[in-house]
Length: 171
Image (cartoon, rainbow, N blue to C red; front, side, top):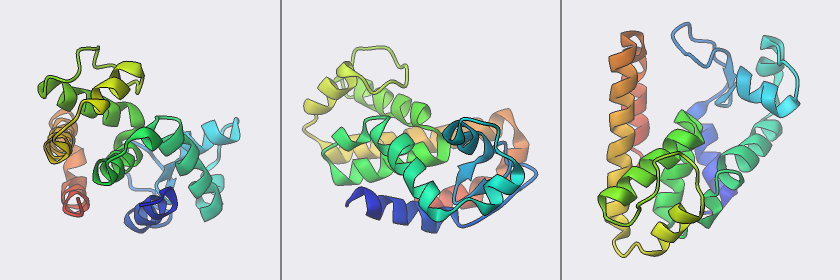
């Protein structure tokens, strides 16, 4: 898939403007939180800024901050790349990359720190992958475990469990 196709899929999953009281991200549009938009604009974004943000801006943010910046353009397996991109959008690039590093470590391919940085050691470990389906499913399991930890730390997050499960069913 191209990055545009990955973004199209994320936009379909995320929908438009929401401001759910249990969502720690606060006001969100196209899946872009108020904090993310503030970082992008390099100034505090208002709720109105979020609600009126264009889809084109969301696409630019996704491409830059959730695909290029975390290094996911270097992932050669299309299935894993799609999973990592969506994971980064939903939980942050650091959490997604930590899950990847953990999965690679469990496969005996990664010996670095689980730090969420997609650096040279992570890239080197990816070059050693011979069983892409195993890595894919290990990362997917790490993502499920992260959702369970969210709910364990804050039971109010359970309201999102069905949506998270439905989202994961696409992978």
